Image (spheres, rainbow, N blue to C red):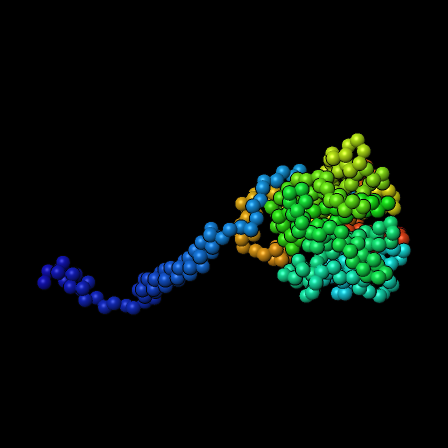
Length: 416
C-alpha cells in the first residue's frame, strides 16, 4: 500500500465524534419546519377571519350616505374659551331618578322637565311628581319603545302658565301643570311643506302666546338615530311656525344641518337656531322687513351647540353636546372630509358603541347679545356634568339638563 492509498484508507475509517455541532443542523431543520407550519396556520386562520369580514364590509350597505362637509379649523381653547373646572362646582340632583332631563322650565320655584321614559315631571324641593305622559306604554326608555312612548325634548312656559312641550316623535303639546291635561297641537308624522315631521326638537313661544316656533331636526332621521344625522350631515332640518289661533303650521326656513335648539330674541322679530352639525348658530327672521331671511349669529363654535336659552345678562346660554378640542383632536371634524370612513364605521359599529368614543367633555358658553363670547364653564372629563343639552338660569343658579345622563345638575353662579 503506497502512501496516498494509506491516507485515503485512514480518512475513510476515521472514527466520528458526536458533538453538539453535528446535531445543530438537524435541530435547525426541525425548527424551520415547525416555524413554517405555524406561519401557514396563522395565515390560514387570519384569512378565515379577515376574508369573511371583508366580504361582509363590501356587501353590507351603510345606513348613512354622508356628504363631504367643510368646517373651519376649530377655534383655539384660549381667551374666553380657556378651559377651567367651573362645572365641577355643580351639584348633581336626583341621581338615578331622572334619566335624560333634556330641557328645563320653571314656574316660580317649581322646576319642570321631560325624561327619557316619556314623562313630564315637576320638582318641588326634593320631591319629583309626574305631571303627564305624552305617549303610550311600555315606557322603559328603550330604543324600540321611544316612538310610541314619546321623548319630550324642548319645554317652555307659556303666558297663561301652561307648558309647551316638543316631543321628538309625537309633536307639539300644551300641558296643564295643575290638572295634567294634555293637548296635542301639532302631530308629528304629518306632512308639512312636502315633508314629514320626523324629529321635532325644541320650541319657543311668543310673549302673547300667539306663535310657537319650533325645529324639526330631520325628515329622514328620528331622534333615536341622532348620531346618524350628525354623521350623514343631512341638510333637511327646518324651522317652523305654529299659529295657536289659526292652527296653521308654516315652514320658515329649510336646508339646515341638524336644526336643534331655538330661542326668540328680545324683540321677537327673529329666532336663534343651533345648527349642530355645522357648529354654529343661525338667526332666522320671522317678522319685520327681513322676514324669511337668515344670517349667521355666531360661526365656528368650540363645540356642537344644543339648546339656547336666555341669560340674566341679556345674552344667551349655549350648551355644547360635544366639543371640538384645539389643541387636540376632533373626531367629527376629522371625519367631515372623509365620508367613506363614516360609511365604514356605521357598517361595523352601533350608535351606542360609537357614543363610547365621544369625549365626556362638558362645556357651556354664555354669549353676549351680539354673539360674542362672555364666559365659559368647563368640566374637561365630565366628572360632574356630562352630556349637557341645556343651561337654564333661575334664581342665581344654572340648571343643567342632559340628553343622556341620569340626573340634573345645579350650579350656583355666585361661586363661579
